[in-house]
Image (tube, rainbow, N blue to C red; front, side, top):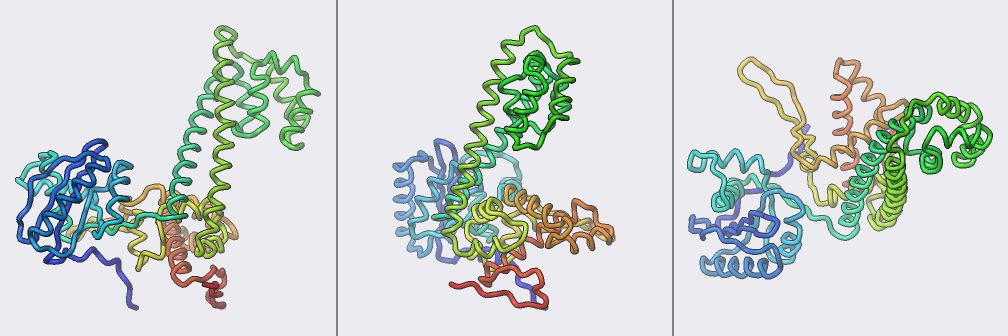
Length: 419
């Protein structure tokens, strides 16, 4: 059976200019090299439009002076500081590529047999990586996909912030009313936040009484915690060992945290609503949502991280983007175990992993494959990683073929989606 492999970036055209940008927060460093080895000394320019224009003007002058045809502009994978420059260059006639910082670090040792790192050396090393053909293709999300990436990242940050505040809240409650944490364990529920906001001390619970407490719990949580839960909280309040000194200051911080947790929850809900809006503008999102176990938030995160599934020609390219490609270290008779590289987008791996968790459960679409892997002796965590890779292959295939997922695909053809 013939297997497609991800295409490496072809070695740079023999008549192409290689340009490299070492990205910084305020100052970038540019560098140009011609195929015959002629180059210019790395120069600094500001990470602003004037600097971008200066870089492009010098690049065009160098290209014309050496009668070069193509332009390849590379940069080392970095944080948000590169994005304005990338969007500026996207409108120019140039091929944009990126290099893995690990590759740069390894190749740097060969240059002068020294680990020396300077702004003058780094651009040349990155240019060497590009010349050898080891640069990575760059897909910049556009339109709805770009919005989905921003929304997914904002949601992830908001969830982390809410979790941190929830942990702080538990620490403070343990000082005032430690027994509360034993009776009400789900700190993010509406009933818990309501009680913490309105009656966070044992004395306030006792003053309220069992009947009033039970009525509030039923109202806030739509009848789920009843008389028994109210009785547990009331009895815990009567036996509480919470402190009384410095209480006012603690209560002030608790009110602040409860308010912020509520605001973060509303913000997360608004982000998820926006995700649904932009998902509707991406035709192939219907293919991804047809997979049982993938919801709109997961689909939005996947599309946002990948950018556009249709711009990748093989599954290996997306697998590497996610850092789920396998490697082993073997020597002689020693056969090393295979591991995932983890050199891709970490949030994409996280989304796939948690999606796989729901799909390996009973009646999930990957339950049988997961059980087979575990029965063969594979560790559960490795089996979950294998299912993440399997899920990514399924998504890539149905988007590529413009179909919807069919669980009994062995006996039934995928139904083709309308263009």
